[in-house]
Length: 217
Image (tube, rainbow, N blue to C red; front, side, top):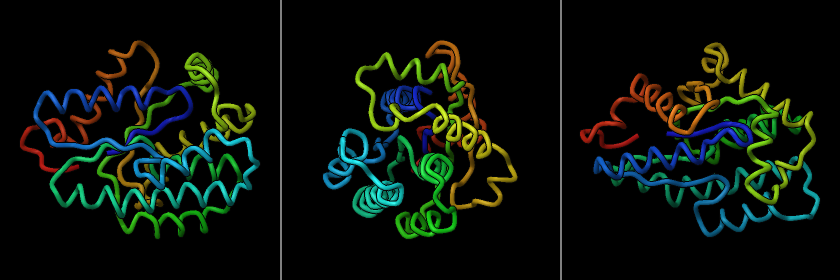
């Protein structure tokens, strides 16, 4: 299962809340973030989020794909084979939103690169947290020093938000089967309110995850 959304939407917080519930329920699972999740991925993450060096859009996309390939090959697939649920903080949709729509890279080439990286792995469910751009950036600004993406201009964030809106449409999902099922969840309100919406979405579309009887996600 994947949690997605723009800056400040609360995906990491809601993922951790779900993880805490699964731990209490005794459900075997592992949590990873993108970029990162492996020693190689963590070094790539530092470049992508915190380096002051200029990055060409194609280089940026390639680094995300490289981190994803390493995570899928060395961590995610072995964990799935071992019977664990996997919770991911970002995956394919972020690359489609930020690099294709935000940076203007060609869809065909980016999709092909991701196909190589994911080795056919398709999320059972992606929870897409949606929040107005201004509110999300305001939340993100209160967390501390902004990263490379949080510092991008408003036009960039508007393009990313419009892309996520598009991804929630059934017609888009049918045309992009590699992304699996995507369910949009309103990320406004208190953390508890959002958590209730998230769990309702999971119960409706991936009920095995909330059951001790489930063996993987």
